[in-house]
Length: 366
Image (cartoon, rainbow, N blue to C red):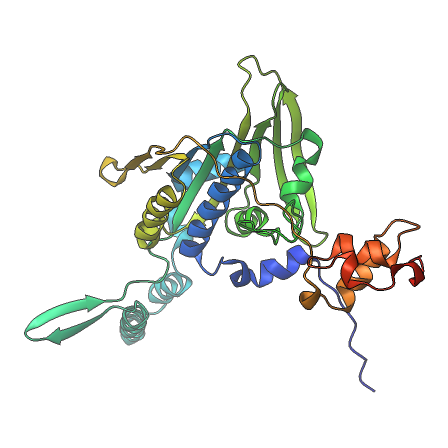
């Protein structure tokens, strides 16, 4: 008799790590673009919440393989015997040629040449490189998959409110945790963006996120953390306080991820330009650093207004948009002794006492 399937459950972090396309992390290029958006928009929110004019500095730095290995703690070593890394088919053919004589050696050489030809044909067919002729012109299309993928360090610095020292691990290391839950207009409210950047860093490079943050008149908090995918909990590697003699306030967050700058360069730069247009009260400094100087990019967007817009206020639920779950939640969170009249007028919009009759006969909600 076959065994019954075992019931399993997944944490939110594990679910979104497997279905990362839901959060905009479909491929390395889009993951780079989404990470930039999430960091910049979080910095805007952090500055607007305390009513200061945002000053945001974003840097994308391309990292070589050697530097990534040093960040991981690996030491590069030279290979002493390169023959150990040759293909097994070639080494076996050499052995057969040494042992066999006469016509057997010639047969082995013919077999090896046929194998080399077959490998060349398979590699050329899998390179996705084709040519087409249109009007006498030859156009080459397609490249090898992943040829433009590299490693990047994204660093975003702002002058916002900063993060409380004790809450930094849970603010960045728990998927579906946010300070923007509620009925109000916000740039994001799902609690996915910065956490998904950490999840993508864990999947692509294995590097933790590094944060430096300071609130007004407080010391600088330094935190380096990873995320436990299966428990949806932060794994804190470093969490300490430092002196703040200059009185700095804000947040600096840095993450190392896999990305594709070549294919998404135009989209990232267009996003920064459009964001500078719709937020004239903010100043942005963008920098892309690469080993080759001709590939580096420096952009500066100065502010054109000296006044921040008012913060959005949380609104009440409209009677036509509530359902059984919302009504049950409102009743459960009501204080003891709250009447149904006060519950309806305080928790729902467009309802006044004039619309409720007779209020004195409505019982208390327990």
